[in-house]
Image (cartoon, rainbow, N blue to C red; front, side, top):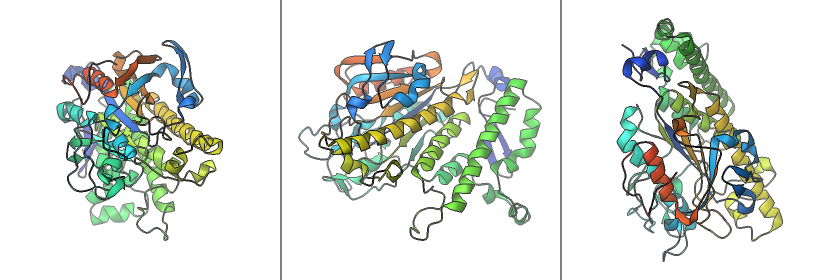
Amino acid sequence: MFDRRTAIKGMGVSLTLPWLETFAAKNNAKNPAIKTAFVFMPNGFIMPSWDVSGEERNYKLSETLQPLKAFKNDFNVYQNLKQHRAQANGDGGGDHARNSGTFLTSVQVKKTKGKDIKAGISIDQLAAKQIGGRTELPSLELGCEKGQLAGNCDSGYSCAYSSNISWATEKMPMVKEINPRLAFTRLFGDPKQHLNKQEKARLAMEDSSILDLVSTESKSLMKQVSAFDKQKMTEYLDSVRSIEKRLQKVSKESVDIDVPEMPSSIPREYKEHLRLMYEMMVLAFQANKTHIATMMLGNAGSNRRYEFLGQNEGHHALSHHGNDKHKVDMIKKIDLFHVQQFSYFMRRLKETKDGHGSLLDNSMILFGSAISDGNRHSHSDLPILMAGNAGGKLKTGRLIKSKKNTPLSNLFLGMLDTLDVKASNFGDSNGRFI
């Protein structure tokens, strides 16, 4: 018997399937579930190039948001939001650690570099506690920069704050996965773990695939589903194999004897690494492995060098530009690059079927930061946008201007309402909207 969470199995491997109309009717599943993700950008933006102008339905995209032009009707831009608890509030320096620590928790994190860390449950984990049991993985935490849970990373704040945005409890962060191969294995398992000696010898001559292990049952399933579902199944299995090939290619090309601690499956090129992690989220949502995810483009205060953009100074160092035109221009290039990659993510979501719509149609993807101007460490007028219309529950293509200094947590409560997650308040909320 197959149901909405059907998995095809073989040789100890289980491959969860996307939403299929053939079995949805049997289980009264009228619509696919809403997928929710939070994408964190470190160090803020050059806000004059981010800010859009105009009115709700008639606004003009800014310079930095131009890469999203093709998707203008698929997302909302929010203005006048503030993360009050990311401010010092008597705690002195450490704005970057507070940026990430409070981004999804909306609480004042405890200033400590010791083991006595204290934040609060994050919005993604609050949702995961109530609805995460519907999927194999309650949530998925990803990133592109290695972090740590101990040590002083920002003016007396523990590295646990700088390295994580997702918190299961006030003392336990959900550590992110930065290795795309390990993320893939977490989602689908490692094919080679389930093979006997004869099978390993056979596959030693070729690139092994998770699909090889479920081929018999997948062929049987194809005979049972509608023509619509056959097409969707084919596209899904092709997506899984495509990512496998990219990971295998990275594994072969990325061995670097000068950096032996670098996992061979993490691409040398940041752009490829970033896109692979975005693909992990697409696959996780497509396969119904999870409906909740977070992604850190970099740790808080990241000093990554974007040499491929023509600059050799670290991101964090550049963010303290002091209005130097050259440094401002370099940060604008970094900002534009990340919006371009988010556009890639949106495109992949939009071209991936989910029910009778797309993954983008059935998603809420929040992109932004709890720092706006990195030069001044401002935590008001935050750069926030949200893609997807949550299965028709949200009206997109809008500029939403809130009252000045509206808590970001009010938007979080609106997202929880959309997910049918019960919460009377969250962090420093004083209302709710979406």
